[in-house]
Length: 267
Image (cartoon, rainbow, N blue to C red; front, side):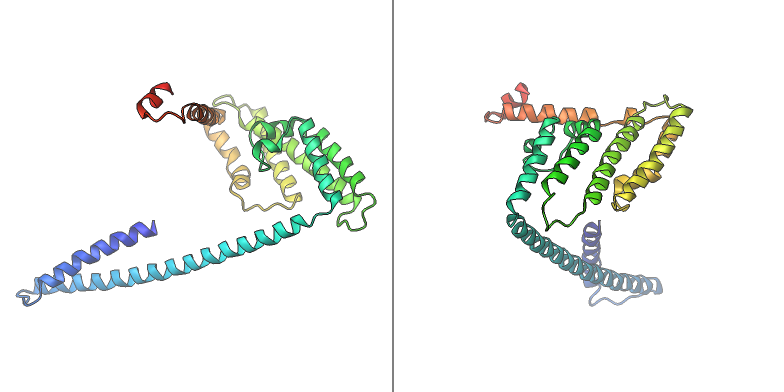
């Protein structure tokens, strides 16, 4: 937005400069002409000042971006260096966690070791209590004789229990939030109020920030939106995600076709 404003100001400035050039050698004959020329010159000065401020602000933003970029890169290097120093038993723990996740149908390898999405998160929420119970036992047994560990048994138990509780609570919250329009009942309203309050409290107990957009939307806007529309399940974007999947499948199937017309028809 600021860039577009800056461009429009530069164009306005060019127009004013052309007007000023056209006046060279010509005297203003009337008071109205003198006032018009004075207004044009004042406007030109104002635009110059605004453009100068925008350019200064852009330099500051570019400097901040470069600083944050280099800081992130240096942090990533430190993390990768420390990650490679993991001891053998730490690598074994990670492998055991992956085995437990795959046992419940959650495969991080399908996401190339990245963040889980969609069906895997639903499976995690459905089996949260059992899954985190197994993870808790796995961690306690793996570091039982480790003198270098930084967490006590009580801290591990508390964190695993809180994670399981958080997944279960949010699973119930999301289920209620998918109530279709005009299907909202007073019972669902009461449950939704309780779920939002408890979920936000559990989120804070985990030490997570409240500045994230999604948790802010849940705490301050979700219930009001459900009341306004009598349910917001009809606004779900599942069909868009499904269309993306079909599009990706069709794109992979026809990626070897050079004729764009045939490629379009086949899709």
